[in-house]
Length: 151
Image (cartoon, rainbow, N blue to C red; front, side):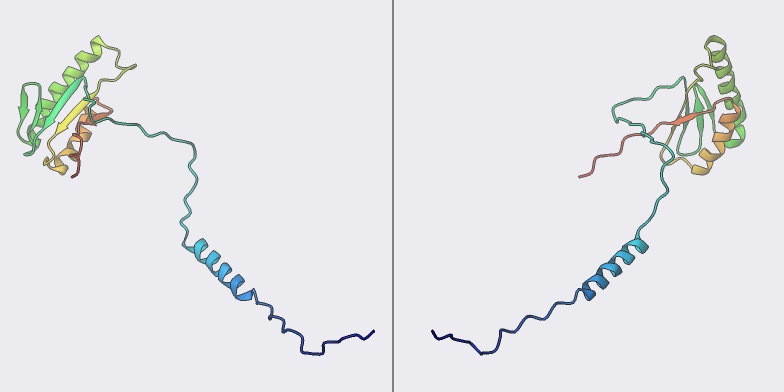
């Protein structure tokens, strides 16, 4: 029996691919995302924000009006200037006192709705809020209108 031997060159083995560049890229991406991430502190407890509907009309026990010129109105009384608000706010405080004499204001404080014009001066509105607090209203609800739907 004769044996046949093949003495030709052995097939070349592929060189092992280095994983070092891929590992470097992965670590660079990891460092990039760690540096660029915004870390927010955890919330102390879960909060469910209130919902508002556009169809819901708010109603309060008292309504105070503020027009674009800064004029205040309550029931039939009108105050043209910030300096003459004292009488109007005294009338509002008296109405609150009468309301609290008939109702239990400790259990359910009266709601004051402020219907301010969109063009009302912000400085006038900001100056009005402490005076309303002094009149006995701990909370003032600003009446808004729903936004117009976009095209």
